[in-house]
Amino acid sequence: MNIPSVSVIIPAHNEEKYVERCIKSINDASAVYGGEVEITVVCNRCTDSTAFLAKRAGAKVIFNEDRCIAKVRNDGIKSAQGEIILTIDCDNRMTPGTIKEAVSLLESGKYIGGGAPIRFERYSFPLWCNDIMCRVSFGLTGLYCGIFWAKKSTFDAVGGFTEKKAMEDADTAKKIKKYGKKSGLKYTVLKENYLINSTRKYDDLGDWLYFKLMFKNIFAFVKAAFGNKKDLDKLLDELFYDYNDR
Image (cartoon, rainbow, N blue to C red; front, side, top):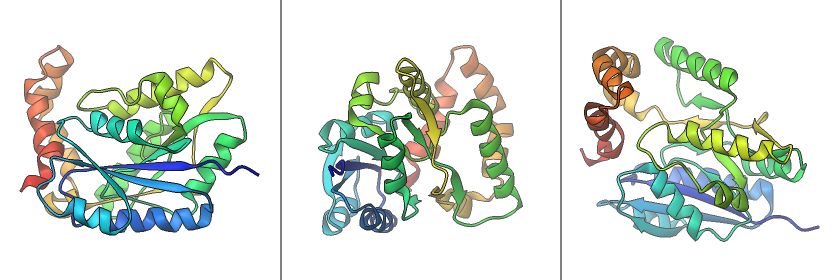
């Protein structure tokens, strides 16, 4: 029986605190899967020990200088040797059955790919509110994100991740879903496994972080809706692309 090879892509910007635990979660999932699993860490503008720690943990390391998470992921996908691709952000972790379940769903011939449920690594009232919002939005749209999984040929066919600074995950899910529909394949979500979502930004900036940001930057969102994305891009840089520079 042929067991498909898998490549797991990890975008990382100064993630020395998290890269080893992320890789460990993938290795644990690899052991359950039993097939060949390649781990690629895409070091994006790293100035810390991320690359060294990733190599020490057995991952392949490539380098990228873009300020766009989608381009970082796409570089990893281009370099991948596996037949099936999974992507996970470096501060997050996967549960042990993740790879096995994703491959099983793809091999069933019913699905084009999918995402994963998101569960925070700790909870509080505001984090439960965030959790509920995520579950409702994913449930209504069906555009599950978190851990993306699909065949490499599928990512190649849709042009990889949509190369934009924000909401690239939802756009990419939409593309894969549309592509699958042409062949009668569904876009779905893992049922037995999930993404363990890091709470580091909440730990640093408070559990009401995203609710506060929505109210504080309401005008930036409104201006972006009318085509002026300058203030929103600045916010995204501070919150995502420059966060680990502090």
